[in-house]
Amino acid sequence: MNDLYNSKKVVWSLVAVFALVWLYVLGIRSLVPPDEGRYAEMAREMWASGDWITTRLNGIKYFEKPPLQTWMNALTFSLFGLGEWQARLWTGLCGLGGVLFTAYTAKRVFGARAGFYAGLVLGSSLFWVASGQINSLDMGLSGMMTIALGALLISQRDDATPAERRNWMLLCWAGMALAVLAKGLIGLVLPGAVLVLYTALSRDLAIWQRLHLGKGLLLFCAIAAPWFVLVALRNPEQPHFFFIHEHWERFLLKTHHREGPWYYFLLLLIPGVMPWLGLLPQALWHGARRDPGGTFQPRLLLLVWAVFITFFFSASSSKLPGYILPVYPALALLLASYLEGAARLSRVTAAGLVLLAGVVGMALLPYMVQSGERHPDERLLLQLYQPWVLAAAIVAAAGGALALLHARQLRRDMTVLTLAVAGFISVQLLLAGFEHYGQLRSGKALALAMRAELRPDTPVYSVLTYEQSMTFYLDRPVTLVEYWDEFTFGLQQQPELSIPTLDQFYQRWRAHTANGEKAMAIVGLNTLRVMQGHGLPLRVVAQDSRRAVITNL
Image (cartoon, rainbow, N blue to C red; front, side):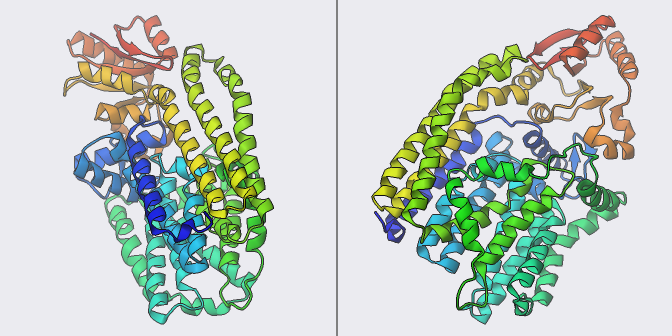
């Protein structure tokens, strides 16, 4: 029981089951807006149009992010057709690959048992698992940065051969280039800043001679530069918007209304690293200790990576939870390295904290529905979600109790495995149970009701709103009415793609009716009442507690 990591049968069985479950659950939930619907629709439009250079959302130029995820999702749609698991496949593969590569990195740098632990830790960390099941850019970026981090660690080992150092460093440069294509310049800036800080702290100036800068920069540019050149040639307005507005202004200004307190990400780490929170302080402290007898200090580099990225985004005026996802592989490596020699008390503490979290979750369960009082129609959805949350809490409590027993009996590997299994299953239960609420958020039912009445020539309007997921389920763009938000820059280039005022929309709606032309619109419930008050001809096709679908005939 203390040498599970040495059993190939156990290890490969765990990998197989983990991968099958990870990939299977990609298709069991609706695409929840905004991110899942947005990036699925961008890929659908790229696939439908055949334009793999100019990225668009709802038919409008959309340059907020680079195209790697859009490319991968469009490729998936080309191979497997449109669907929810197809839209999440790239994200799922990045999350799964990140777990496997983190485990491999730990094995090469710290040893076989640390490799076993690293895979279990990352593959069960709440935030990494949840993000791996969501179609968002953060996991794509994190997957590429995990390649860069792992390759750097393997290449810089003191016992690495010259060929190993060259090949792994080239993979590191490729990972950074793909990270830039995934989400922008942070794919290069963050690893570069980490390396500078590591050099200052470790006084290992010679590492810069081991980075293969010449070959690496050539490879980096060969991968990252072509799209930026091509998109700028076709769209001269893109470079200023992307590099100035989306990088400099997003970091320094509050124009995106995503600000938060400086400790925002520190608070997110508390649930995000579960079920390993009880070990995190010790692992970070362990990472600060110098490795005796070695030039390269892998734990120090991991500590700098985790701390710097966390505080880098803490200083930003724009904060979203997924920004610090790239720190989790580094934390998993630090936790695995610490767990290998951790005292029994540390494992007991970790297991006891998971047990406590499960018990607290069960105790707080009755208060869940109270959060739905402002939306009475959604109370039932919260009630339907309660059994799933209860099941997750029970699994966490049972897993913590069993791990506590293993820890007391000095079964190191079984303690870690039990905590990992409990953490992974708990997250999957929470995600699966969210589907009732996710269906409402996505508007999937309304979109399917619309499709039953749509003809190829039927105009569809979205009034004072844009439903990110509904556009994907409709399999077509809509015409925006008095709505700008993230489309502001694109509509400045293509103003003909929207209707700027409600009055102009009313005129067009009446004209459709007078000419006997069927039109449809997606409207909020308040907007529906306003339109009814104006005496516009309309019929409600379908509605829920958030929006309605109407037609004029």
